[in-house]
Length: 455
Image (cartoon, rainbow, N blue to C red; front, side, top):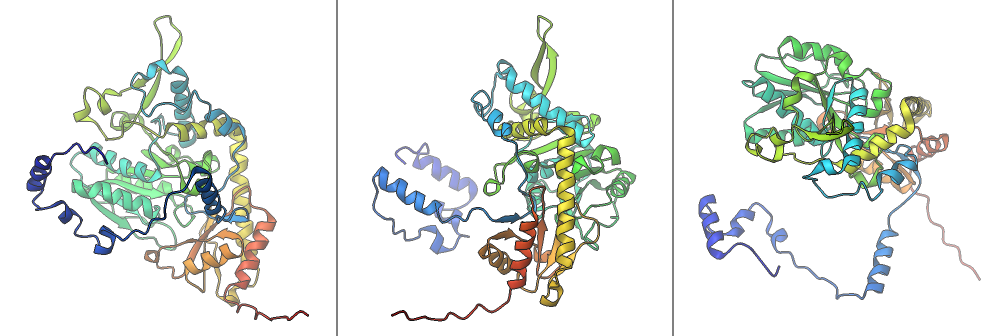
């Protein structure tokens, strides 16, 4: 860099405060080979050569084929109108509109998004979206602790996505908040013992393994001990499963990828958070409200924003002062295009295809090769397949056969070699046949190559 804002005196003062002698000491935990690696960079290219080189690299990506991946990100149909409207220049705006009321179109679109998420979850107050599903789980835990005031413990089910649990622990540990995991029993969360010092209980349904949790019973267990119940939900599943508000959840959070965002190598997505009325003033992030202007016309404003980033920043409920506006807008347009019945059709067909996939796998004679379908308890559109080979090796073998399937299940679940499979409304019989054929070939010796001489 040609310009560094810190003078040697600034750096020396910072190091004294931290208690180290040099900047290099800050990176002492890193292996030496990674601190200053030898880099054999090729010489520069002209633009034409560079573009050709990049096209060659891009061509190595394998496209097409069957996609039965899940574990939080799935391939669902997105109508053409969704990206067409959401990517209009009017919506592709600056990071944070500090005079947001000027952009009434964006505020109205955000208000509509909040309304849709409220209707899906059965809870009355939604914010304008979160960064992603994992951070929404962590922020919900913080909200529960703020509301409980004197409680500093949170229970979180092992059925919550492993990445979400890791993010929550990262958020909560520096604040001295204890995170206790509830181990699964037969793939679902058992009734936990909720002590008086627990601020919130967090459970995901369908859980990371795909199975539907007894959410009403778990919510009652939390409330009986005076704790909040936080439901982590795939929003698409709420088109056919009971809404969090209907079984007593205080907070609903999750990742919104399944209702309007493409797979796109895992992002970008958006997180959502919807809460009960009495938690409104604890809700982090931006909220768009409806009002009237001085002429009596319908208008939209950012509501309660002072607590986050302006005159009362020191009393902010969270460090979130923006939101994943465009990704959330994709969901709002997508939900509008599908409508309630269309969304229900997508969810219903996904369930049908997933259960058909599980049934066909169970009847394909794969048990002799060491595969086992875990179809119980009830699942939405993902389930566990036990494997005779390590999960990552199975994933590579399937990919080599042109089938994108099998999210490895972490060893902490105690399932041995296992993967999560999913199906969506886009899954065809040809996709299922391709997966079965690929699984039948796993572990089979490669055919011997025969050299043929030609005259």
